[in-house]
Amino acid sequence: MAETTKTPVTILGLGAMGQALAATFLKAGLPTTVWNRTPGKDAELLAAGAVGAATVAEAIDADGPIIAVLLDHASVHATLDPVADRLAGRQLINLTSTAPNEARELAAWAARHDLHYLDGGIMAVPPMIGQPGASILYSGSRPVFDAHRDILELVAAAEYFGDDAGFASTYDFALLAAMYAMFGGFLHGAAMMRSVGVSAAEYGARAAAWVSAMTQSLPHQGAVIDSGVYTDPVQSIAFHKSALDAITRASRDANVTLDFVAPLKTLLDRQVADGHGALGFECTFEELR
Ligand code: FVH
Image (tube, rainbow, N blue to C red):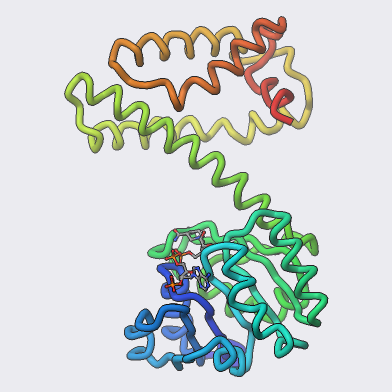
């Protein structure tokens, strides 16, 4: 193993994600110190060679970057504020999900304490850590990213997006927004199919293939949005309004509530009422900003 991969790391937070990260570092032979607010979550990691810290202060006494994998912005402050005066000169890699301005606030807080701050948005679930397909988007301190890129790549593909600490988080949540809309649509469709006796698992298998095929058009739709030209559509807003009207009727027939479908229908209805029916579907983007 190359010497660079022996960098010691400290993990604060042993939820599902913190445990997955720590286990991957340990498997790669990194000296790994772990801490969790509630004791007892480190048993498997200690058995695998981790050093357990009883307090945050003890954890950050270990050398190397400090990796926070906590619940949210407030929990990062709750954990690090009490030891802020001991963090000068250290490197914090915050993989906790925080909103963009929360990440920027943490970067400013870190700067006030002479702490070097790198923010990361994890695009993976715990079982994906260390596997192909996992990625983490980073922004904030370039020197921290460059110094530790090799160990960050152990857990997920690592990509750096500049010194705005809030950028990675914006990208993270923009991708999650697309994911949650897709999941919401899946739940809606599963409820419709239940009304005709089809299992959610069977529907899920078919929906996966369909949604995968449909996502192929996203780069093209993005290019249309970037061009700002919506006058030569493959399918118009009026066409999609008609489809949403039909889905609404079909959902009512199946006694399925319209919670997931109604917001998009409302948007398309308004676009048509405003005279944009002949334009491309991508034009609805303009109303969202
Ligand atoms: N799990 C996932 O699929 C997602 C994938 C994308 C990124 N997220 C984010 O990663 C952060 C950690 O997620 P997690 O899955 O590890 O979350 P939990 O299993 O719920 O563990 C939460 C840990 O945070 C600790 N904690 C909570 N509040 C505090 C606090 N006030 N002070 C100190 N620690 C706190 C909690 O400790 P405990 O409850 O065991 O004492 C856990 O260690 C998260 O931002 C995801 O959005 C994961």
